[in-house]
Image (cartoon, rainbow, N blue to C red):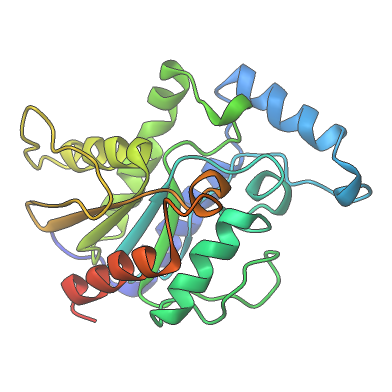
Length: 235
């Protein structure tokens, strides 16, 4: 695949970002994201929620793609940027900052000055789902966005899957690009690593509170995976 030059790549990603933000393809998800915005918890009372599909963001020349499940109801669905304004983002961006991939250790709002360096962050499903559990048809409607994003991010060489759901979505996106994925599919696990064509794919437990508060995922564990991604990406 021929590599896109910087300006056309950035323009194409900007257009895709606008398309994602305007998506209303899944009625259940649209209703949920808007109902959450209409009745926020007290700590966010008076804030204007994004309440739309949440695009990916980061460096158009990224060599590392970090992939999550979906925006949080009061995180990305509120702020308009994935892993922004929630505890999972606090944990993730601290690790990215330690690795030199983020300009700061916090991600609070779209205008907070955060920049990603050599990395791009996206979600398998772009709307906050009830119970953090998209339905299979919602997953399938959203999947083409990731495939198109990955095709445009043609410098990416490492995909870091934040959880099993993202791992499966990453494998699917890679296969859409015409790269063979073994059957049975490579199994997810923390620290899992597989080479698929031009990509190395790494797995880590999701930085959810369920994992970080219980010690299932520690800062050192996440640092190890992010550090491995930097090494494989040539950083």
